[in-house]
Length: 49
Image (cartoon, rainbow, N blue to C red; front, side, top):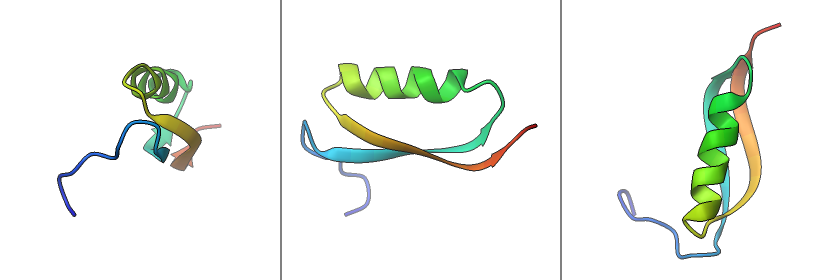
């Protein structure tokens, strides 16, 4: 269902649109982990050289 959150401990994949330094993905992952999520992977659409 759209708009619902997964239960605590549910494996989730974080999707980021673009990675330059990785700081945003690291912070988002840390925030999700602190909220009780189980971040199993981070996927990105594009990266910078």
